[in-house]
Length: 225
Image (cartoon, rainbow, N blue to C red):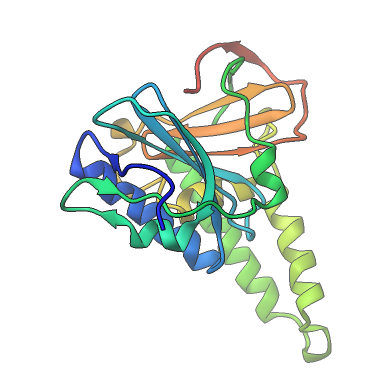
């Protein structure tokens, strides 16, 4: 059952991009829910892959201006995406998880300086993945437990890029969700923004946001829409 008229995208590629994002979310959580907010000729889709502890945001341009704010099953939304037709059927609302009620702010974002280059972001993620695998393989059998692996993961992925407050897990999430595709650096502008306790890593393919970050950051006026 749908809760509104179909969303008609400005370009079929927008529907394909949304579908790819939903597939990646479902890879990490088959029961994932997403919150949709549409208005002003665009729709923003918010999800929270549990492995990364961030809120992921994928936006898409719409062919017309519609108003919508609803939390739905990511799987059911994916089933309703018609890529070739450039539209999506919005399924019935579900009871939203707690994170869906605490989304990043829409305004007040300021750009944070010191973000490493795209190549450095990818390199840091790759090095962290290799370190985790190496340390996991080195564990003696009696310590090869979920708790120990989680401890190692928390230690590695909570490290931040110097001067930015951005944890490695945010860059890892962006890469895993397809927001940092393998294209030449100059073709993919990447920026970091802050608003109160929130940080947002933004690329043309999507954003990841997280809260409760250090506030002593170097910021300049900017817009993270």
